[in-house]
Length: 184
Image 1: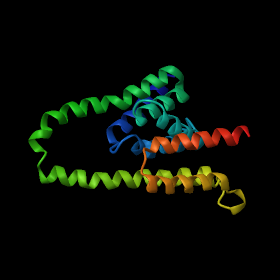
Image 2 (image 1 turned 90 degrees about the vertical axis):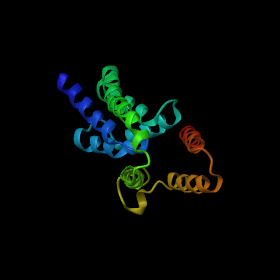
Image 3 (image 1 turned 120 degrees about the vertical axis):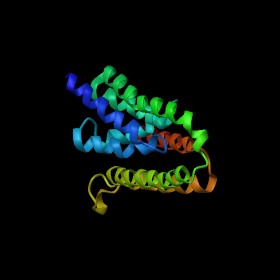
C-alpha cells in the first residue's frame, strides 16, 4: 500500500515538474496514467476536466486532487496535491531570485518562445483523444457517433470564437445541457 502512495507521489511530482502552460497542460500526463496504471478511465478524466474547470482553484491542482482521491482516497488526494505543488514552490522560489536578472536574455526568451506552442500541441493531442473517446464512443463507425454531443461541441466551439467569453461560461452551458438531456 505504501508503494502505491510513493508511485502516486512520483507520477504527480513529474506532472508538477514538467507541466508548462497551466492545468490543461497536465492532460498528457493524466492520459498516460490511464494507460499505465488504470487508476481512472478516460471517461473519468473528462469528468475531472469538467469538474476542475467549474470549481474554484487552479485546474491542474483540482485534477490532481480528484485523481488522487479516485486512486487512493483522501490520503491519495493529499499525496497527489502535495506532489503537484512541491516542484512549483521550489522552482518558483529559485526562478524568482534570478528572473529579473536574466529576463531580457535571448536564451530565456527563446526557451519560452518554444515552450508555448509545445504546450498547445500537447493539449490539442489529448483533446483529440478525449474527443474521439467521448463523441465517437470508442468506435470509429458512424453508427456510434453521439450526434447530440458532437453538435454541442461544434456550437460551443463556434461561440467561443464568435463571442470570446470566458471558457467557464461555455463549460457551464455544457453542464446545464448535459443535466437537461440526462433528466428529460
